[in-house]
Every structure is written in structure tokens, then in C-alpha cells.
Image 1 (cartoon, rainbow, N blue to C red):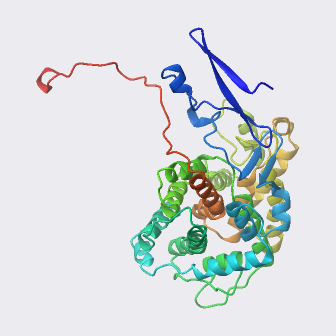
Image 2: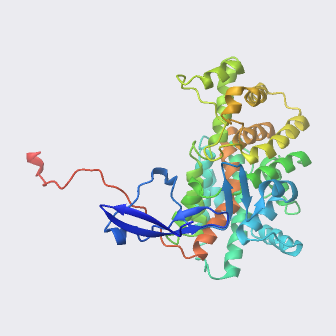
Image 3: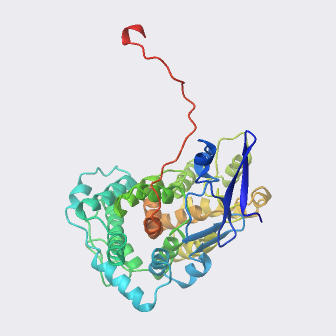
Length: 428
């Protein structure tokens, strides 16, 4: 393969080097494009064909359904590791030894107490406030309670900052839900594991002991692992570009939460349940809506099927479908909405229209089913997504700062008015 790409503009040729990644991904390095061409830029709405960075964190091949964190297959990590191990892997580059994992867990617990004044901020929100708005605000507020800047060249300071956000974020998540439900805010139980304590903080009631379910713990652990990172998506690239201004970790993550809030990104699993509710209200005829989905003239969209990146299948969906079946069997939930979900999934997997187009149920479809069966309000689904994505955002921010990447500054092609003479107001 040629090591350069040639671009010809007005008869003049310009050569640009090719960069080849470790998985043989090829990119044209155009960082000198404007300088050598006298101001020519590229335009790529949505950055679908633009690499904003070089990263060693996550490899994604949508055509073949491959997802790897730091070289490890998502299937192996979901089966053999727990969420804290995966978080450590993403953030620090290697799977932890037992001593490193024990220390990481202990240090996170040490930093898990949130300043009590945060409760005053939560109290100021009405119960009707969307949990993602609350979570974004609370995460940004952490900056006020941790005002010192972090020396990104200090391993100790970076490690302590990571432990702070990993410890405090689940508390903010739990408090966001408890505010919605009118439950008292708590700090859980430091003797519990990371995921077990998340469930304790979210669901415990002041008048009874919370009983852990191994199946629920396992399902949530897997969901968090599957959502932990996904290459340069909307929220992750937001965290990196905000952080490129040397914005602190907490504020950068708050910006990622806001990006994740969008219904085209993290709000997809919420959209799935809203669709299922609408089908139930219409009578619950799944075949009717499958037919509507196949009708190009019908505006109805079948949410939770297919994926804009995975052109074959979503490898995360295969893993979490098993957990979803286990959760539904364990809880014995009788819910017409979940029955509709199972019916849609079954029909899509056997319908030639969907099979030929590889429109399989994706991770958002199954995660919504699990969260609903666990008793998590639909407005909290994207918050749970953010909880899983936290270590990925941290890892991406940390990598960007360590590589000393320049401040993000996209260009544009101006299509507005040319120079116009100013007219005084009485002459307009």
C-alpha cells in the first residue's frame, strides 16, 4: 500500500501521509491541508469519515460485529471480569492484579462520600425534573466541592481524581432516582461490592432490609461492562473536545452526560420503552407494528433494532439477551409491555425482512427490558447508561490529556451573505 495519498486541486497535486492503526485501519493525515493548499478544508457533517484522534482504548468493527477494550474481546470481559476490573482496564491500560483491584476498590470507597451540601442542590430540583438534567448538574457541581486543578502529569493526582469520580458518581445516580421516587438519600453500605452497593443505594427502603439478588447483580454488572466505552461516539468525543480546553474531569464528564441525554444517543433505550408503551396502548398487536415498520410510507420506526455502527449484529446484544432472559425468569414479572417486547424480538429474528437487513434487537432493546423489570423508572434508563459509560469517559479524557492533544477547533464552509454595507436603522 502506498504510504501517501495524493489530492489534486486546480491541477496542483498535494501528498499527505497515511496512518495505519494496529488493526489495519487506514487514515489520511490532513493536519497540514490548510497550510499547503492555501486554506482548503474538508467538510464531513457528523464527522462520520473523520478521525479526531488516535486512541488505544477501544476497537470497534461494525461490519464484523467486533468490540474490544484494550484488545480484550467484549465477550470475554462480560463473561470473566467484573465492572471494576473493566473500569481499571479502560482507564489504566491493563487488567489489574488482585492487589491492584483490591486497592482500587478500597480507594473508591474511601472517596465515595459526597459533600452533604449536594443534597441542597438536589432539593432545589422539582420531582418532575428529568434525571439526566439533575445528574449533569450534580456532576458539574462536584467541581465546586473539589476546586483544585489536577496535575495530569502526576500519576498520584490522576489516580485520586479517578477514584473520586468513580466513588461519588454512583451516589449521584442513586440520589437522582431516589429524589424522583421521594425516598430518603443514603450512602449505601461500604462493605458491599461496587455493583451491589449501587443496587443497595438505589432500592433500599428505610423500613426494611434490602435483599441482594445474584441474578440482578450479574445482569447490572454485565450491562455496565457492555456500556463502558464505545469508541468516538457523540458523548465521548464531547468529553474529549471539552477536555481539550484543559477543562477539569468532572466538568468534562458533565458535558458528556448532556450529550448522552439526546434521544439519538443514550436516550435510545428510553425510546424503546416509550415505543412499547405506545404499542400496548394501541392494543398490543405486534404483527401490526412489524408491518408498519416494513412500510416505507409509514412514519413509525421500530426502536431498538439495528445499529448505525454495527452493520451485522451488535455483539453486546447477544450477551445481554441471556441476562435479560435470566432476570425475567428470576423476577417472574408479569408485564404486558415486556410481553410485547419479547414478541417483537421473536418476530424480528424470524422475519425475512428483518433477517435480510440484519435488523436484530440491539443492546438498547434488551437493556430497557432489564431496567424496567428491575423497577427502574424509564426516565432513569439513560442515567444508568451514563453510570456504565463513566470509566470510558474517564479513560478518553485521561488519554487526551496525556497525549497533550491540541484544543479542538473544527472548521466550517461559510454559506452566508457576502460583505454588506451597514445601513442606519431609519434606512432599513
